[in-house]
Structures are given as structure tokens and as C-alpha cells.
Length: 69
Image 1 (cartoon, rainbow, N blue to C red):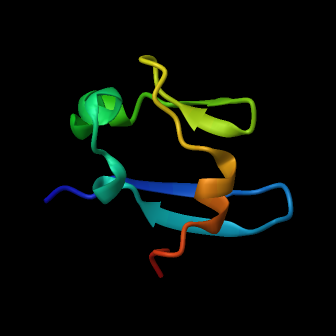
Image 2: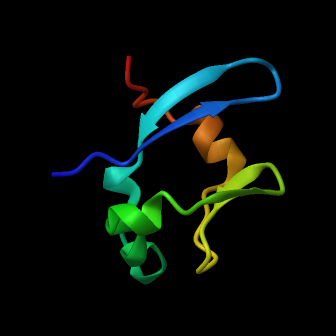
């Protein structure tokens, strides 16, 4: 299993490192299983988004409770 870790810093100063590997299911997230594609995200309207339109709601990322330490 390859980890898909993203380090995030929110407007209120909260910082998190989360592994999204287990969240990459469904057709829209299939390309993100490729590490080179996964690294190709951008910030778009307060969340992260990939070229194919895959994204995660900012609330989901903020409340994600499987943070890495």
C-alpha cells in the first residue's frame, strides 16, 4: 500500500497530515492512485482539487479524524 499523505494548514491555524489512500474509491478518484497524478493537485475555492475535477470538501478534510502524528 502506498500512502497518499497531504499536509494541510487551515485558516484558523490548524495543521494536519492525513493519508487519503482509503478515500480513493470510485471512478473520479481512480487516477489519484497514481502517485504522479496525486501530487498534481491545486488549491481551488478553499479545498484541494485535481485536474480531473476530483476534490474533497473542506469540511471533510478539516474534520477528518484519522490524522497522522
